[in-house]
Length: 213
Image 1 (cartoon, helix red, strand yellow):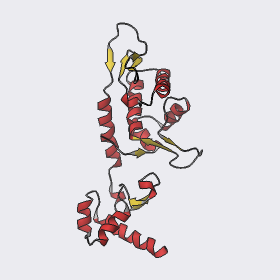
Image 2 (cartoon, helix red, strand yellow):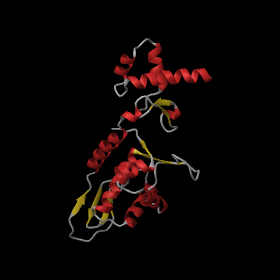
Image 3 (tube, one colour):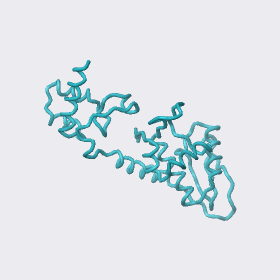
Image 4 (tube, helix red, strand yellow):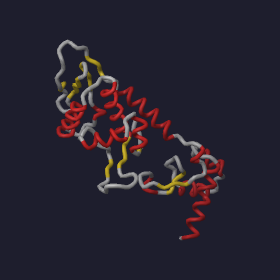
């Protein structure tokens, strides 16, 4: 299932269990790069992590903390898959032999890497990581009372359109339904994640924007 989510470094650190300092170090040492990086040096939202980034980082974190796979091996695998194919980490079949990592080449299908003979293989359950990542990500993104009745704008959400805080629902969509004659209750029926305060805030915001236009 395609999961459309975007996370800041602070959010991704909380969800993945990797500190922001580690994230910066991994980026600097070519272990892992976020999906979206703007060229400017500073400022908010310069780096944005995708849902696939979240699954990958959780995978790498487990390889490091549970199986003690050396960081250099993760770096080497990352360099290999970036140089040989466009396949993401999340598409790889991965096994750990002792503390060493082997993976199935996304192009040839051959197992790559070295490991001591005789040690039992452990196969990383990526599907489990994906399921846990989606569950925790949705929990983090779930609306709370602090979002109710608030209008927000973020250039990474709906291309910078004004939206109901904590959602991807544009203010203009709510206003359009209101103009069609739907009551606040009927609009909430259309968008169950909204509450009456959101409808009121959207209509008020529209009036304010028109008054200064």
